[in-house]
Image (cartoon, rainbow, N blue to C red):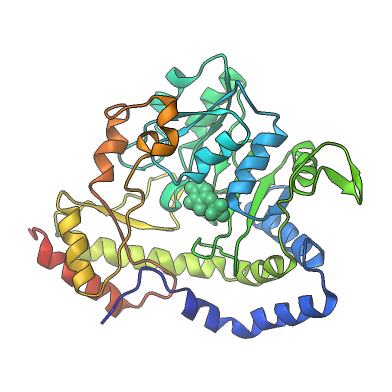
Length: 368
Ligand SMILES: *Cc1c(COP(=O)(O)O)cnc(C)c1O
């Protein structure tokens, strides 16, 4: 029995008729870029997250980029984020011409360690981007408290945490803006690319709307040179359909995580920890082992796909060599990178698939 890492196909087959209706509707009204489908999704997603505004864009990278651009962050500025994340978080900082400043993560939550934040703040720091990695929200109260003391805005990278909660509040509702990706494999994914910024700041939302559409709110009148980062009409329609299923899909991910937790408890694998203040939505289910490479190979031989998120931290990437970081700068990040292993995780993963993964893992590790 083969076990894929994700299964987008069955998820989409289940709602095929509804997606087909969107396609027919957009085909007949030809609102291919922005338009009513996107507007409706923006309203529904803002309501879901609990913010007053949502601005839909074409990728999560664009969401981060435009949040920074609308805050007028640019050359000479510094933005603090974590070294253990997908490169898009830092690329958005680079895209506006600012300098990414990395800090380490907490070894239990895998998110920004608030205890390290204050020391990284300088007179040039213009924003802080904590990442809700793997499906759980960073320790926002502690981060926000430090940020507020220094008058620095927080932008939440919620690209892996659609529907996650921190002390009862949804991902994307923290800081001045929340940024989402709707890449197909995310907890809420488009049938293509997509992204959004959520915020309670009307002025910021207005600026991001201008930025995404050539600095224009009225056709052929441009108040500044912006970009083209608009969401497509089809994606807005598909996302509005899929949003209705997000909570159920997240529950299925949580059930799969609970099944893994229980089955792996007697092994020497370190299983993910749901922080007491969080409701984790398991975008990824990441275990840790000293024998990671051996286990990964063994799973592969058994037809079980797994992933590494992420094998090379950002401060050691060729892309960021010019920042001058070196091996040893972020011991927690560097320590976990060789131990982490992402197991198959997707809504609707069957218990026999989980059992296959577990039994294969048990062959390869100490069971006490
Ligand atoms: C996916 C992701 C992004 C970027 O999203 P895209 O839609 O692929 O541009 C940014 N940050 C994190 C943490 C992500 O996982």
